[in-house]
Image (cartoon, rainbow over all chains, first blue to last red; front, side, top):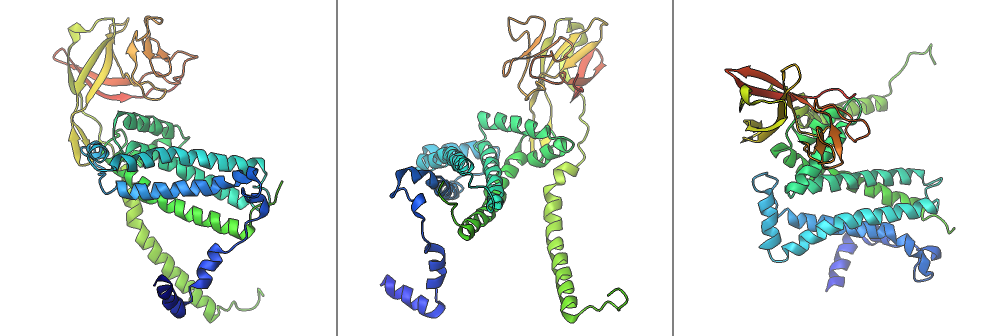
Length: 224
Length: 170
């Protein structure tokens, strides 16, 4: 049945070359853990992406209950955590995944660094990777505020004070992030929500696309 | 090349006009959203009014005392009455001093003689930041600037406090 559906579509729009182009490529022997177990270090990048996918999915479902409003944000999180079946699990995935992403990302960075895989001709991809790292930190920072509990509030307070230390534009930068010159409040929460759920993910997808296109173009760096 | 009359080919002309129109449309699309996003930065912050902190000037001693009061705060569409805190005392010249308790290091809350080891000082529990009685940060502790000072005025013997004004680092 599925084969028939596939054939019907393929006959009309010839999709086979499209996915073959994406999926069909040789994995070099030196990066295959089945061949040589120490090659597991090459998995960190893929694992980072895997956890990112978990973050995106769990985050999408969390927004079914979450409201970015200072009166109700904490209550909505409490509700989805305690009253909604499996809500605790989905929020747990998002909560712990946020840390795991950073860990995986750092391991991936260390592998690339110590193998010298960032060297010519892959400098551009290293730069893109560093940008991805910053976007991830931004996601972590903005997401931390959303439960609107005391920890979130004061962590954001401190984070904004750090942003304020930036030379020359610090004060403006802080206001731009917080939505108010002196208050961390209703406008801060909506802003952080927008940044966390729309702006940074958009930037992340674009950067990841470039990251993956470059690695396919240039191939994985050779064995040590 | 330079002597000849510069000709714009039909293709170039079309390219330029399409880029121009496209750029114009993109700019037109982005102006309002960007202006909206940066509005908080450009909005003038209204200077705060003085608030009655419910403390008679006669009750102010040379020992800093903690004063709490509430102000009306408008945060976009959300109005609230948050509480504020100051450490108030009379200095050697009999002038009233009202210090903000917000640590200039990373924004925790300091208290007078908050640590038994450091009498006659303000102490921040977060990173052991310390300040002299006049709010000057003590060298070798994390804060790099003195505690902010509240604008103040006295009416009918009652203390009124306004905004906390930051002081430059030593």
